[in-house]
Length: 78
Image 1 (cartoon, one colour):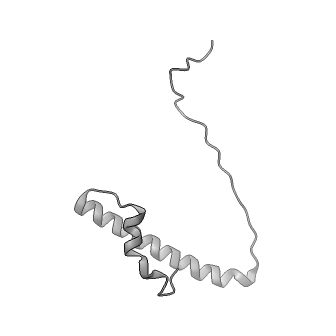
Image 2 (cartoon, rainbow, N blue to C red; image 1 turned 135 degrees about the horizontal axis):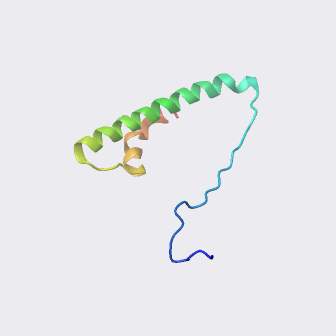
Image 3 (cartoon, rainbow, N blue to C red; image 1 turned 30 degrees about the vertical axis):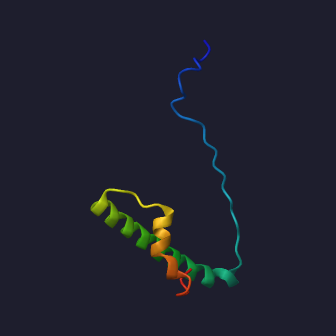
C-alpha cells in the first residue's frame, strides 16, 4: 500500500556527520585554556538569557548577545 503524500512524515530523516581529529600534545595547554574561556562565555550567556526570560519573557537574539560580549576580545578572553 503506497504512502499518502498529503500526510507528513512523523519523523523526518536527519543526517549527522562526525569529525574526529587527533591533536598533538603541544597544543593541549592552549586548547584547554581556550575551552575554559569558551565555557565561561557560554555560562555567562546562558545566565543572561535566563534573566531576560524571567524579566521580559523573550528570547535574546545573536545581536543582543553581541552587545553584552563586545569587549571580550580586548580582554583576551576570545
